[in-house]
Image (cartoon, rainbow, N blue to C red; front, top):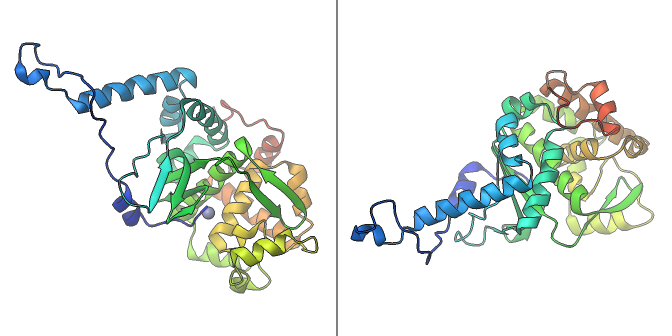
Amino acid sequence: MMEAINRRKFLKYAASAVAIGAISVYGRAGYNDRKARTPNPKVARDFLKIQYRTKLEEATGGTLEFLKRVYDVEVDTETDFSGTGNRISAEELSFEEKKESLLWLREEVVKYPPTLVRHISGLRKIKVLKNVYLDDKPVGGFSTDGEMVISLDRGASQRFTWGGIYHFSLEGNSLFSGIFHHEFSHNLQSWNMTQEDYSEWIELNPEGRNAYSKYNPSIILNTLNSPDFKASGFLCENSMKDEKEDQADIARLLMTESDWMISSFKEDAVLASKIEKCREYYYRWSGGKMNEMYWRDLSEDMIKEGYWD
Ligand SMILES: [Zn+2]
């Protein structure tokens, strides 16, 4: 949920995979060939990777292959930021966590038309990890051009106090799927939002750009948690950071919450205008596929695999 970091910076810290040492696997040459008896870490690594991937595919009904084939998105669960200093760090998931999060991810990705993801979003890779830190700060996820990192629940749930109307905590699947849709929105923004679009969004705030100048995490958190807090045109403290976060949080709301909850936020006129604007963007970016009927079907939980066939 951090703002996007630029690609050059990202690549600088994304090191090559850590070699697995001390595994005796021999090369393909004959047994009598002395050279062939030298352990070949690359062969060992590739072999283990393929074996592991096959096991994960069996456990998730071929989710990696499905997402690549239908959405052209590669999903990876490796911590290949390590050895790069503290700027980006993360922990690998257990097999069970990988299985669970891949199945969640599949359910969320199919909510979008394949053409939107393949040709409009620019999203090419999703990394699913846990305990992700960016610049020494724990983050739920972040996006670079075409790449998204999602941190699985850290154990502690995140608390949201949206619009001052509804207080709740997110954890497990709903936290994870929220992060995915929020980050997906950042991908769409970076490839599709024009300066005009951003200005238009900012103007939805009665105070315009000034609405974002008050962002101060500690003050906002206290304010939002106070029982006297009134609806403000923002969903949560993160939304008050800037127009990109604001829109990504609205997208998260639209993609994961019930109609009932969305309509309760509409009591806040500014929030209502942002919800409408966000739907307009999705309608445009999806070439009309995410239309009125789509939002109805989504609220009735009808957007499943095969919906777009
Ligand atoms: Zn964000």
